[in-house]
Structure formats: structure tokens, C-alpha cells
Image (cartoon, helix red, strand yellow):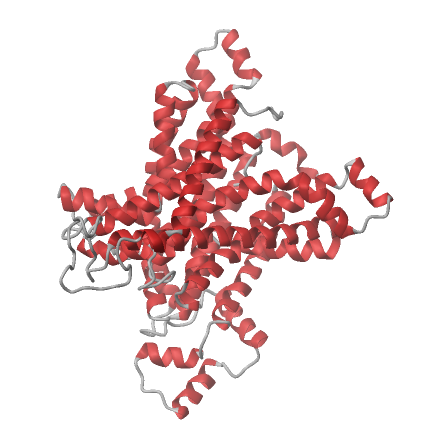
Length: 311
Length: 277
């Protein structure tokens, strides 16, 4: 177990090194001069002299690898530089946004699970009934809708037409409803589809038929099915974190939710590169870590996997 | 569990119907300039946010431009960019994956490690960052989505090549002195096309949503070029005054993405191959 975790963590460290390199490359290759962008973002009048000084202070005159090494070394200690716009440390800004995004993301995942698991069970148990077809139709539609479209339609129908909710999100519960719904609908739709397929596969296995033949109560059988499907379910949830992080940029911008996504979008508008860099780095760190945790948790859930660890 | 089955005739009929529907959409987008009732770029101060009428079948937006014409022209942007993007990533990814699988060793390591690194980013996050840093424009948006898109095909093609390499007919090809290019193109490619095509088909809808999403954020296809995502963004502030300006492109997006997504489901069912998630 320990060896397996060690190997996985090492792999993640290696991946993060590559990720940090790509992230740094991203802004290095961006059109224009970083010193110029910084001065523009601050609204300073640009002269050749000021420009040269800024370049010097930002270390832009050094070679690419030295710049990357310096940046990565600082990033390792959670120092992601300061925002071009207001001079605040990027890490601090990201952390503040992360709290709000986490709130949104966690509630969206919980909502999606709460809705999709019972529906997926219903579909799998009543396969090819009208209910199955109906739920699948809705999940197919939800899967085909871009999240910005869902948000705009939700705002139009719930806020403008029905006047049920405020248009601009505040941090109260009613402000959380719309962004959470908009984030959940595509994820929930995908969950239903994938969970249904997984449950159907489990229900078709001999142990289910065996248990039923022996007269084991249905709820015990279903509990076993859920247990055996949990690895796939966890994987699906882990992968949805990527969708959540990408979706949060759109949703938070629309609903003015002060999270990571809105921070990133504002940074893009202001050409505030250190913040964009930080956002990309943090997002992939979260994504990779979540998937590492799911990988490791398989071994806790499923004793069968512990057997072949020596390989 | 895994066994090949011939698709039922009902599934085949559905496949043809949706192929025809998708073909119709492509045709519609190609003929868009001829079908537009008005000039999609002509602004008019006298008919701003005008409700649908005989002259403007779907109304006008805040600049007095004909929504119907813009939606039609938007179909062109959306369908063209998504299919082009899928085609390019398909070709690039497949070539890289095949090279990695066939030659193995250092080539394999380099290509697959790069793919791994890209897969560590949530796709939309990377796309938003790349498009945001490069600035708007359709080419930049396509680049932003394509930067990661190729990895799916590369991984799939590599796995297929590794499996096929052991087949006797491939070994026989090597023994008869066929060069690697001849074997890869002539023997391997036709045998692994199924799963690759299915993945490409699923990606069309994904890419459409991606491009529309970037355009909605203002870092994809930009005004005044007609694109559904940017049209929705432009008009959403006026949704109370002119709901048609939002609902028309929204409806167009939903219908198009649904048709292409359903088509990809049908293709997958008919070819009976799994899709890599």
C-alpha cells in the first residue's frame, strides 16, 4: 500500500513539473512584452527608461530557463508573484477565490450525486421502460447543453419571467442556487448516463443472479451492487472536477460569484498574467490531486486490488 | 461481455436519419449566404431590438442586425470550426499515437509524457487560459482547444497499435519486407479506424460547445463575426427587452449539438466500440 502510494505521488510530482513548465511557457510565449503589460495593467505612462527598469526588476533580461527555474522555485513555496493589476500576492487572491469556488463545486457535486444516483438506479432497474427512456432523454439533453446556455436560460426563465430568484448572486443561499444549478445540470446528466451503464454491468453479473436465486433481499443485493460499482463511481466523480473547474469560469463570470473562475476571467480581461498562471497551475494541481486520491482510495474500497500490488 | 454484434436494422435506420439531418445542417451552413433574408452584418438604428416580423423572421439585436441571418451564418462558423478542429486533432493525434506505439522506446516516452502533461489540465481551464493569453479570434480559440484535443487520439491510436502489432498478419507484413509507413497506413490504420472515428464523432459536439463557450466569454470568435456563443453573450443583458435575440442562437446551439451528439451515439452503437472518457 505504502509503496503504491509512494509511486503514485512520485508520478504526480513529475506531472506537476511538466505542468508548471507548460504553464510558464504559456505566458512566456504570449504576444508582447511582460514589462509593458505590467505597466499597462497598472496604468503607468510608459517610457523607454521606465520600461527598461521594470524589465530589470522583473528579471526579464535573464535566459528562459533561469526565469523558469526562479519562477518554479518560488511557486514551490506558494509564492506565485504579485498581480500586475493591484500588486497583491497571487497566492492570496487564489486562496480567497478557492474558498468560494470550493463551496460552489462541493454543493454542485453533492446535488448532482443526490439526483443522479437514485435516477441511475431507477433506470438500471427498470431498463427500457418508459421511465428509463424519459430519464435518458433528459440526461442526453442536459449533456448537450453548454453551461453558459443553461445559465442564461435559467436566468431568463427563473429570474426574468418567473421572478423567483435574484439575477445577481449574493453570498446567501438564494444566490448559490442558480450557479449551483447551472453547474450541476451537465454534470448530473453525465453522471446518470455513466452510473446507469456501470450499474447495468454490475446487475448483469452472476453474483447478482446468484444472490437473487438464493432469495437474498433486494436491498442487500443493491447494496452489494453499489459497493462494487463504487470504484467506477468514484472515478467518474474525480474526473468531473475538471469539468467543474472549467465550468466555474463561465458560471462565476455570469453570476458574479467571487471565486477562482471569476478571478481568472478578470485577470484575462486585464492581461494580468501572474494570476492566469496561478489559476492554471492551481486548477491542474487540484485536478491531479483529486484523481490521485481517487486512485488511492480504490485500494481502500476494494481489497481485490491490494493483491497485485507487488507488480 | 465484449462481443461484436451486428447493429439492428432499426439502429441503422436511425443512423441514416441522423446522418441526413447532420448533412442538412452542413448544407444549410454552406448555403447560409444564399439563404439569409438580410445582410447579417448590416446595422440599422431604426429597427433595434425589433420583435420578429415578416422582414426579420427572428427579430433584430441591439444593433438592428437580422438575427435570422446571423444565426444562419453562425451555423457556418460553428460547424466549420468544430469539424475542422476535430479533423486536425484526429490526424495529428493519430499520427503521433501510431508513431509512439510502433517505434516504442524513446519516441513513445517523449510523445506519451507530453500527452500525460496535457491531460493533467482540465481541458476548459487550459483552453480559456490559452485563448485568453493569445487574445480572441477563431484561430486562437481553435488552437486553445486543439492543444489538448489530440491527446485522446494519440492514446487510443497507441493502444490500438500495441495490440495490433502482435497480430500474425502484421508480423507477416513485416516479414515480407514492408516498410513501417506501408504497414502503418496500409495495414494498421484500416484496422483501428473504428474506435478513432467514434471518438472523433463524440468530439464534434464537445468542440462546438467549447468554441461557443470561449466565444461567450469573449475570447473566441469575436464580434462582429456571427457566432452563437458571442451572440448570446451580446444579447443576454437585453433578455427582458429582446428575448428572441438570446433564444434564437440558444435554440440553434441546442439543436445542432444534440443532433451531432445523438449521431455520435448512434455511430458508437452501430460500430459497437467503447469510448475513452
